[in-house]
Length: 408
Image 1 (cartoon, rainbow, N blue to C red):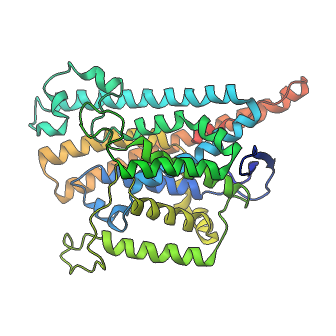
Image 2: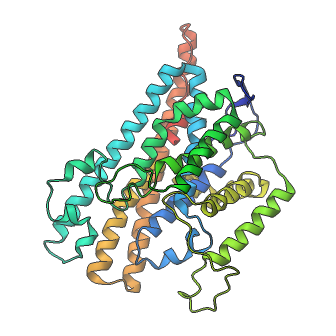
Image 3: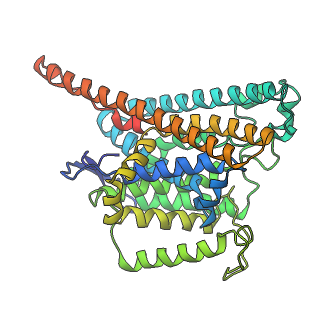
């Protein structure tokens, strides 16, 4: 995400069309969004290995929300930066085509992960026994229903977040048009649908593997995605940061402190229960209000903090941003590594030597992948920068930059 790139300025009205103006910004690159997304990706990698000791230290242990909420919120934010602004340059029709091409790319990655997962588990079981529920029983006993998975009619566990992303990105052009009409109207319609799903969780997309439907109900999670897009609009008016309000920052901090006390696994650590309230875990499938408030509080504190912006410029922040800039590839490869890690732990135990080996190897592969992809991204930028002056000399306009789309 680049703070130095032009940002759209959206003025919402109650019933009139919103105007979008683009102004340049001379500020330096802002790594916060990429870094936060990188942290979320690594936490998802750890959380998807139940036997991994490191998952005791991820976000889900200190709050109602977890890395999935951050991932979807930032997907909405990045979608506005990558595609919302692009609509202004190339027009709605060409912009929609670019969005759908991205959706097709997401589907290819999903399909590859499904094939790799199914083939790996079925092959592994021929040598080392693993429980049937390692793969959905309907798939473990035969492949006659495999087509349902490829058509997203059946979503196996740990392979259900990219389909959610596909649906949300696919309707982004509609969200864009609503934002252009009125920011408040967009939030009202999106929030109303989210509220309806929370009142009646049975409204969901069908899932052949689960009678309750998709684990991540897109009709509820669209609100988080929309909030991310609207957050990008508001941040664009304030040099890439959300407005600092002392009382709001204080309220977010208090809420997150209570959330941490409520969500911390006191029993798992053998500690006395210090929860101030006896709350049940909020429903993740419909993005329950406590989870929504949790991720919004985190996002506001990060995007309104100059200190976090400075930390994101440091060495650790830049490494996290490296992962975040290539989220699709890092997530997909991380999901496959998770699969092998779970198989290894299930078949050979989860002792300390295997814990160290699995995590060191996993993180090293993901870092190497992100580094290689980033070098390729830099080379492409240099080639595009070299072609632009030549195009102008020939009397043709310089090609529009597409680096943001690749980062998205």
